[in-house]
Length: 309
Image (cartoon, rainbow, N blue to C red):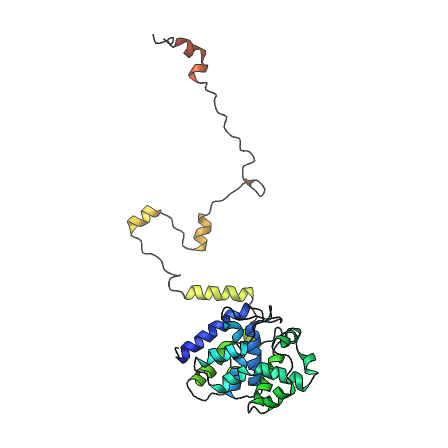
C-alpha cells in the first residue's frame, strides 16, 4: 500500500469531494457537509490533532464500503466504523485515530443505555439505525466499555457526530485540513487552528468611496478626453504630402473647422421633412419603344419562316 502522505491526502480529498452531492443517509445534508461540520466542532473546542481527524473521517466507511457489504436499507452500511478504521490503518493512520472511529457506534449505544432521554435527541435516521447496530448496551457491555481508556474521547466524538447535522451551515472546506492531515502522516505536530484559516488570501476591505467612486460629470469627462487627445502626439500628426500627391488627392483639403464649414455644401431650399429641394422634383418620363415583333412594319418586313423538310 502506497503511504506517500500527499497521495493519501489526494485520495481522501477525491473521495469526499465526490460525496458532496451524495445524501447523508436519511439526513438533510450531504456526506461531505456532515464530515466537515463534525471536524469543525472539534476545531472550535481546540481538540488535539488526532481527534479532529477522527471527527473528519468517522463516517468514511459509508463511502468506501466494498461491494456486498450489508446495508441498513437506505440508511447506510452495517460496520461502517470498522471499514473506515481498516481503510485508514492501511494508509498510515495510527490507533489514536482509528480506535476512536471504530468506537463511535459503541459510544452511541452506551449513551442510550446510560440516559434513555438521549434516544429522543437522536435524529429519526439515527434512531432507525440504532436497532440494526445492536440497540442500547446491556449492563455487562456498558461496564466493560467504561473501562476503555478512550471512553471520554469516543463519547465526545459521538456527541459531535449527532450535532453535526445542520443543513446549510457554513464551515471550512476539506482543503483547510490539508496541513493537519499531512503533518499527522509525517509525524509532525500541527495546530488544529489551521483548519479555520481560509484557503486563499483574504480580500482587503476597500474604502466605501474607493469601492463606489462618484462618476465624473459629463463636462469633466469631455475635458479629460480632450486633454488626453491634445497630449497625444499622434493626434496632431499631419502627413507630409508631395505636390504630386496633393494634386492627386485634390486641390482643396480642409484642415480646420473653418475650412470644413467653407467646404460643406450649402442648401438654399431645405425642407426639414422632405429633404433639400425635392418638392419640385419630377422624374423623367421614359419614351415607349416597342420591341421589333410588336412593330407591325418591322414584322411584315421579315422573311417568312421556313420549316425544315
